[in-house]
Amino acid sequence: MSEPSEKAVHLRTDGWYGRPLAGFAYRSWMKRGLPDDAFTDGKPHIGIASSWSELTPCNSHLDEIAEHVKRGVWEAGGIPHIFPTTSLGETQLRPTAMLLRNLMAMDVEESLRGNPVDGVVLLGGCDKTTPAQLMGAASVDLPTIVVSGGPMLNGQYRGQSLGSGTDLWRFNDEVRSGRMSIEDFRDLESSMTRSRGSCNTMGTASTMACMSEALGMSLPQNGALPAADSRRLRLAHLSGRRAVEMVHEGLTISKVLTRANFENAIRVLAAIGGSTNAVVHLLAIAGRLGVDLELADFDRFSAESPLLVNLKPSGDYLMEDFAYSGGLPAVIAKLGDIIDGTAPTVMGTPFASYADPVAAEHADPNVIRGLDDPLLDESGIAVLSGNLCPGGAVIKPNAATPELMQHRGRAVVFESIEDYHERIDDPDLDIDPTCVLVLKGCGPKGYPGMAEVGNFGLPARLLADGVTDMVRISDARMSGTAYGTVVLHTAPEAAAGGPLAVVQDGDMISLDVANRSLNLEIDAFELADRLAAWDPAPPKYTRGYYRLYIEHVLQADKGCDFDFLVGSSGNEIARDSH
Ligand code: FES
Image 1 (spheres, rainbow, N blue to C red):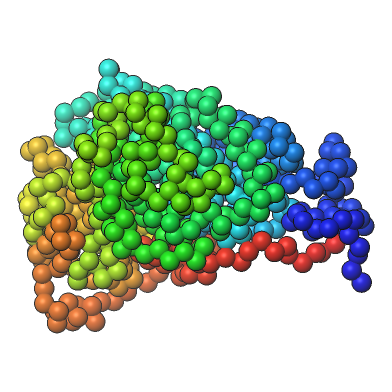
Image 2 (image 1 turned 120 degrees about the horizontal axis):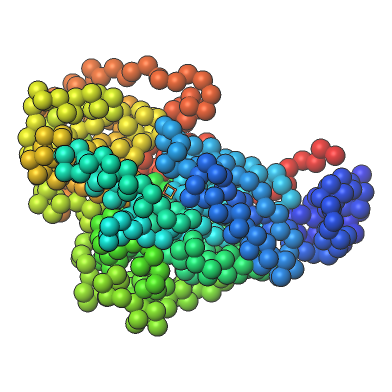
């Protein structure tokens, strides 16, 4: 016989706390100083999902941010509960944090579904933490709001501003070419990371924080405010307050994230010169929500936005400069009618309310340009097709060398990242600056985890000759802080039997970004014969999470989610065991 309820159920947590007898265990164990009405008076319980970890240094300040979210939740009449999620530190985790993005998404999803929460504030910062939290939350569909940790202050070294990652790649090449000493290189290390926060370039962390804002999933200014700026704590406070209101309004994530939001995010991605990693993450988040987003949409909606924001890795400035120039609200105002202002947001107001025309008016024109004076007319992500990438491939035109955007060259092939490391500086390697470097075995299944090695370095002897860029093609990703004429996310990947697997040394490859084509210049019969003769390598891993990953990960053009995680299971409360 079912137990009578004390009052009409209107909160999800009433399924735990709202029953006079069976709710005893839930209430009693959670009380610990909370008054009775914390459980019986219609007060929303807000989970604060924190990826705080000292092993994720760019998220190690999230404990303080979480305390400010709590203040906002209390103030609005909610009950806050901080809980940990998996944390993924981009620089520390091996073989690659991307391998564990789906694991973190599963953790977030089941933690939310299994626990008594009515809404959630997602606290992340490092590259994969934001998409993993959004993917997991999307599959549960609670009222959800994102608070990012914020970027570090600008690095400073001998009078120069230093950007995380971007300047590391640059100085790495300087050392390899003999133009910089290893002692000076070591000196840079402390100068690059001067404060709490995530990478200070428009790398993947900053891109995904900006994507959260562009999707309408965070409050305005979430993308750019530095971690060290007390206004980020205010944003955290206001987000906690808003999470409680969203529960009362029944504003769940699926009501916020429509196709229009993703279209806006892609336009903003182009305007800010954001990371190519956003492609796989946005596809995966959309897949959880049943939003029909395809790789081709990135080309289509990117084309609507010129590049307005002059930040490294493609430009000159850093996230701190971007914040002081008005951040994303200034960019959204400058984009004007290019943006769909009707898209819903966590604020409950249309996306047009995220534009700040006053900030746009006062923005430093060196950092944020106007539509009449863009840095580049063509920006964002170009999606390539051709016989070398039947599932597509991507290139970031604003990070590439203009003269190489149309190029035909002889392939120099590396079968794996190990093969590359072994031979790239071999004096006998037959290579010149017109060659096309091809790297296999770095895709979702092959690496596994689709490593960020797509901007693999040039041979040291060519660097010493002053060569700064060559066309590179792989099934890998690229760090958001990296640059170069690099074709990424080639699908299907080599390990899944894509045509990349059968490229041979000496084959001619043609790249034509303007016409969006990437082709291996062999005839269709020859390609078919090579593919028929191709033998897959035995799986590198046969147990545990790695095995699960290799067996179920989707290709890059589908967002690299697991096939069985696409879609949503909703927030229905699991069967009671008490
Ligand atoms: Fe975490 Fe860059 S390493 S944000």
